Each structure stands twice: as structure tokens, then as C-alpha cells.
Image (cartoon, rainbow, N blue to C red; front, side, top):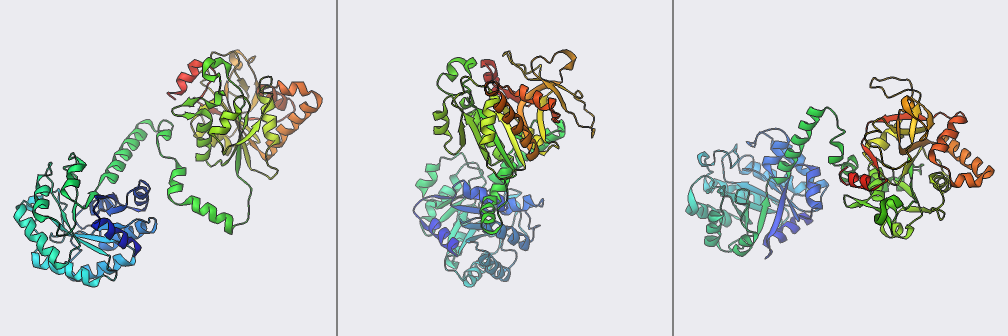
Length: 543
């Protein structure tokens, strides 16, 4: 009932307010998050979302089900497009009772005959309801409501039907006297002349609502100056959704792959957020026993990146901005989208800048970043991991960008140590002198096989036909694989501390293979980029 009070205040305030269309629970939540103070539950778009015509083909009980979903997930008031009231005065009485039970703040009924036809379809051939009969519906609605703030808005269709201003005013006056809390004056011409003429004649007898679907080009100040109470954006949410869906499925049908469209889509994580997953997550903390994290990540981001010249004069390479976000922030966002929540970074050069811009990131400092390699940073990162068990650990370089499916398939792949290898390494080869080329048990094959592909050797000395691709700077470890990597690094630290400081990742992999550790290979075909020089940085901005 609080929602009804909110809507009545919007309707009767001196300011021009807005209601935006929604047609199901998730669109209603999006409308509220956008900042609108009210929702218009459109009959057209609710029908369209069900795949039926806006001719009362959707039953009023189906509409009630949708309204309940919308009301449950929002806090702002909803005004429902109740068409003609779904019958006579008796149907209207039952409708009002059911709307109030669901916390709906207002209903708008139009003076057409049941079953209705949308106003933009053959409008001038549509017959309007008898004035006295429609006034009876309004009186029945007002007599039935239990909350005094529940609003009944009478929609006048005289201008749509081509009956002119005089008939529109005649009907509006009758509906106002019957108890309507507001008048919705509707027009389908491309200029606001009709509704402005109505408002001049109507004055301020009661609030007036408009739907500028066809005369949208009119400056907002015109409506404010005329004294209208509320504007309804009546169908834009569904129209934008349809356009997006048509574009996506057309591209998908043509390409038969989601690789090229995945990053243009809203993430599944965003769907989960709109569904209320954050609240469930907090509730799980309260009501469920504590369980270990499923995946953690360590990002190796200690280097300066001198090859990039002035770009990294006072900031680490991982903090270079690509498309408005730093390389490090992009990785954090991508990993969060695939469900990796506990993320830490080994930082060194420009660590204060990282701390300033990413204050919530867990940071491990490599103070010897100027004289050490990535193997040493990895050791610092692994030593900082919490003691509790974690299913998977993802290791990534801090200067890479990638499609989010890549870390997902690495984390999901079988194997204690899994690395990503790009078979298209020649097309993306960097100008730097150090490339992690790999030799594997088999070259890339398009056919599906259960036979695992494993690493034989990694390093710039892998040449010729032995080259199967390039390591992309991502590795996934099971708990067992994590233990294996830790043991090798601990042995190196114990026997040759200086070697640990200059250890390259290729050397670590080769040492693991030498000790009999299987390293699984997952082949990818591009869709990643490491930023090693200015040319790479330019490419990254168009990635």
C-alpha cells in the first residue's frame, strides 16, 4: 500500500514525472535501477512478450501473474495498463481487488469496447464505449478499492478515434466527475498540437498523463510549461530488447559460434545480479556452513614494461588503460564475471598507483621487481595464498587481455596443471625477442578426441615443425597441481636462491615436465593479446 501512496504523490505533485514501460520482472527491475520513480506495465508489451496480439488475447489472470512478478522485485509503484477493465463493471471490481492484493499502485482503463484493439492499429475505425457505461466502471473501481491512495486513471481515446477535441473534453469531464484520479489523453499524430489544445481547455481540474510515442520530438519544456503531470515512455524497453535479440540471433545463425558475440552481450553474472544473487550470497553466509572458495586467481603484475617508453614512465604496464579501463581492472572484471571472486596481484613498479586505483585488490609486493622475473613473482603469490583448500587456482600475466571463455575452459579442463596455447601464434607475434613457444604431444586438431594433449617443452628455442603454438600467459592449477608447483619453487629457493629470482615461467614448466608432471594443453585460436610493445598496445585498444 506504500506504493500506492508514492504513486499518488507523483501524480499530484507540481513537477512533471515519468513512468517507464516494463513487461516482466527483470525489465521492471532494470527500470527501477535506471532511476525511474514509477513503472508502466504496458498491455502491448506484456502481450508481445507472450507472443500474442494486443487484443485481449492474453487473459487478465496471465497479466496478474506478470504484475505479481514485477511487484515482488521492485520498490517503486506500478501503474498497469488494464485495457478496458477486461469486461464490465463487475470484472473491474474483481480486478481492483486483485491488483491491490499484489501491491499495484494504479490502473489505467480506456474507453473502448472489449475486446480492445491497440490504439495504433486502425484507430479511427474503433468504436468507443458508452460514456455512462464507462463511468460506471470508474465508480465501481473507486468503490472497491480499500486503499484510498489507489489511483484510477481514465484513458480518453476520442482523439485516437478521430472524434475531435470537443468529444475528448466531454468524456474527460464525465470520467472526472465519476471519480477518476487522473485523465490520460492519447493521440497518435506526430505533433503535440492535439494534447496541448486539450490541456489548455482542461486546465487543472485533475492531473493529466500523456504518452508521447509519436510526438517524441517535442521538447520536454513544452510539456512542463503546459502543466502535464506525468509522461509514460510506453514501449521503449521491449522495442530495444527486440532489436538487440534480432541482431544477436542473426549474427549467431550466420556465424554458428558465440565467440565473436560473447563479449558484446551482458554477462551471465549480470543476470544473476538482477535475479538477486548478491542477497542470496549474503544469506548463504548466515544460514549455510562455511565452504572453501571454488577458484582463486593470482595476477603477475610487477613489471614496469620499459618497452612501452613514456607510457610506463611512472606507472606499471598492467595499469595502462585499454578502452577506458586498465589492463589489471579488465582482468579483474573478467574473472569476476566467470565467478572468480578472490583475486590477488603481485605488484612492484608503481605499486602505489595500483593501491590508489584498486584499493580493494589484495596486493603482494615484489620489491625486487627490477631484477627478478615472473617465476619469482609467482612464488611470492603462491606463498601468500590462504591455507584453506581451494579447488582451482588461476595464474595470469598482468599484461594480457582475453575473451572470458579462455579462463573458463582452463578452469573447467581436466588436469592438475592446464595451460592455454594459441595455435595462431604467428599472426599475433610480438616484436619482443622472448616468446613462449611450445612443443606438445600433438599439434592442434579440429576433430574431437578423448586423448589429452600435453606439454613437452616451452621456450624460445622451440623451433620449426616442433612449434605447436604460443603460451598465452594463463595457467590453471588444481589443488594437486598447486602443490607440485610449490614444491618445485621451494626446491629451487632452497638449492639456488639466485636462480629463483631470474626464473622464467618456461623454465618452471620445463622443470615440472622433467620431474614427470603432466601439463595439459588447451588449444585456442586467437582471442587474446599480450601487451609487450607500442604496437601491441595499439592493437589492445581495438581488441
